[in-house]
Length: 393
Image (tube, rainbow, N blue to C red):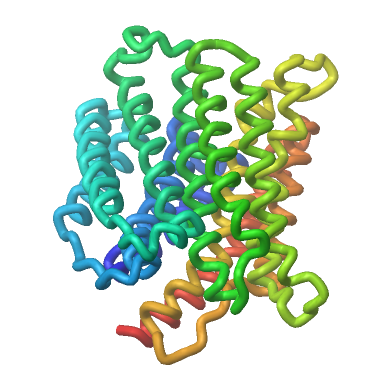
């Protein structure tokens, strides 16, 4: 029963909008800046909305793929996860060590319990071949990386970084959560849900295992590089991860080519979100080389919102309304979410934020405009989600 998780994801998406509004007000110096706003904004998306969707959906999709009964609601997991997230979301902006450690521990317990639940869903002998082309292994791996990211993140407050010999703990934490957890889980959701919303299978089904291993090993390299301070691991990991992600897009786009009616705003949201995901690949060589005529520090230090809003949130614009319709309004045909307004606005915001990295003299105005466009892009999505929720309840 994923509905309780979906309700929490809606709450966190609304809070993401409030955090974006706070970013506008602090950027224009209307209200004072508090130092942990950017981390709060990131965790509302990754640890809040995306994690809730994953916890709600992964057991149901895994059971469906194996012809197993729909799993019962695990209230122990739900309570542990949400109590932990609430404590973290209070502890992060207030920089309260006890809340961060307690919240991180509760979230970690919930993740371990969910991983065990997914591992226990073993396929029958007749289903083992089909299990190579479904998302369960993506969810298990992504959640495992999130456990590591949580340990590293919590360890920032406990002094674990030196004991574990982590050269760049913040970079390890970010890479683990984005390339390890978010990217791999979103890939699993696309693998599982694509045949349902596109009414056709992915192309080249045998490539799914290759995609999985490429992204998994790539994420490992992206984590090992800053952990051990070995740039070669980071570069190899980025190449492997990117190759797997590109192939995933190819097998998703290929079946839709030539069908103009299939290219709805939701489909465009889904696929064009990866433009902003691939942006680090373009600038990574310059960051590694520390090019003097390129805003390396700004991109590596302040470019996170492009990944959060341009990639993860925009991916959610397509998928979350589809899921809300399926589970809250099962009598209605479910379609990917998004409108032409949300599509144009979310990309306009990402472009403006990218521009702000190169022109510091107009940084405050362009970033405020970027967050304004991102808020505008989310309004049609939140309205659609509220309508589905109201109709379903």
